[in-house]
Amino acid sequence: MTTDARAWIDRFAEALGIAPPSEDEVQGLLSLAGVAAHASERTAAPISCWLAAKAGIGPEEATRRAQVLADSLAATETTAT
Image (tube, rainbow, N blue to C red):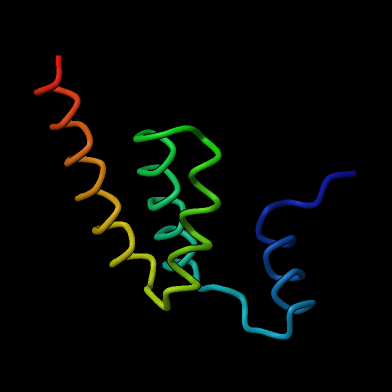
């Protein structure tokens, strides 16, 4: 039996002794993960979320910064070809 994502998140937050993320925070983290995964390898997604949390930056600001980086990398690739 597989636990659904929300149940896992809530239970893992409880195991860590912290409040689970709000639905807006979850959506923000998924957005950040999407930017990272599309601009790089998929494995960049969870690590990018961890880096944002470690830096104390919320999902919305982290996504904005990730998008700036992704756009910059894409522009560099475009000019290099």
